[in-house]
Amino acid sequence: MEFSELIRTGRAQAELLRGPEAPPLRGTLCVTGHHLLLSPGPQATPDLWLLLLRSVDSIEKRVAGDSGTITLRCKDLRVLQLDIEGVEATLDIARSIEALSSLESVITSYPFYHRPKGLRLGDAWHFHPPERYYKRVARETTAWRLSEVLLRSSQPLTGPQKRRCAEDEELLRAVLEGAPPGTRGFIVDTRSAQTAKHARLTGGGTEAKAAYPGWKRLHRPLERGRPLQESFVRLVEACGDLEQSMDRWLSRLEGCRWLAHVKEALSTACLAAQGMEREGACILVHGAEGMDSTLLVTSLAQLILDPLSRTMAGFQELVEREWIQAGHPFQLRCAHSAFSHARPKHEAPTFLLFLDCVWQLGRQFPLSLEFGEGLLLALFEHAYASPFGTFLCNSEKERCLCEVRTRTHSLWSVLNQPKEQRKLRNPLYVLNPLAIWPSVEPQSLRLWQGLFLRWIHPSEPSEVAWEKVWQIVTDKEKTEGSQPMVSASEPQP
Image (cartoon, rainbow, N blue to C red):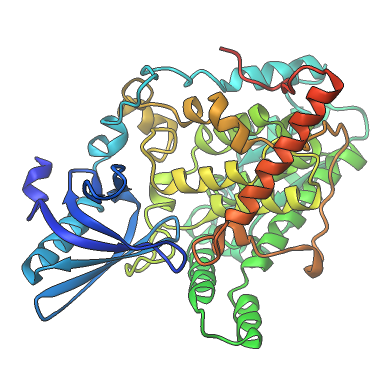
């Protein structure tokens, strides 16, 4: 298939409305295989406005007289309006965008064509190998292999006949035998007891208590799948309603239950972390398939307990290890954001929920995370639509089959460049060797305005404040005659 076959018209004159604060942009609108671009012409700035078509979540079109309007709702929550000259041109461009923004083939996506200057294919894919993390853990414990590491799995396949698995039983028995005498084990099940019981009908279920001595099961249900996606959609709808009263806004914010999901995720992560930190227990976290809520809990637990996971490089390693290589199906979960008219099938903002929880940690402990909101926003955007291959596919197996590591560039190669680091690092960061225990009381959890409201209320003041803090820190270092601040987690060339 050629991209040209899906482009009904190549260009048209248009005016772009980018939001309440941004001035309109008028020029020539062009559709390419992967981008929508608008050239303002010689009378204005020569820079092109560029939109990756993969980032379009939904498209609406309407015509009146001899012109038309296309409204693009993007996966990063932007809403764009294109006023186009000519009815036929409007309809042709709309159909082209619809076709090109929904291509299912991975190898025809833009990361396989993107060749940024200064980067070579293969660079930075080695930045965060999981072996480096496991070797560090091995140096810090003399227990059975990695038995003092948090564990994660999918549900046991007991089924209605209550089948047993000798290998599973031996594995969990070895975990306790390798730990200090008297160590207890807790199985944190991220499903409700009723859901776990129903799972037996389809071959799943829970561990039989008698077969796993020393282990106690705790149910801490976390929403996944459609309920989580619908909560995300309702929140974005509420944020986009600029005419509602304050009472109505607060009612809708509570009704969407997004902050309730944040609270439940942090609470469950704290439970797992407290079991390890304060009781010295071994913790096994599992859900249905072990690719969604389990990753959420184990990732947050590590951030709470491990100071190195809160560094720039350590956090990137955590995302790479716990989400990308552990098989979170990004291609399915992030196929659509909050605006798609399609009925949700496999979509779920689990990774976004994780990023929101991390933002809550950073807000409550502003000195303990080496990275700031900018990194979290970048990861959100690239998880849904990216010119890089880092979040492509649903598993490591699929990435190998598509040759992602040899045919696309890594997102980390860009984020770790010095010019990007200043925007992503926290200038007030101080290494905190202690665990950070977040409050999950209602007054402690806030709406992440920098994400959910950033296209409605301009973020410029916060960006200016961020730059001023950097300037103050830099000036202070110069005054004291110290060397420029360099983190120990700075990636090696």
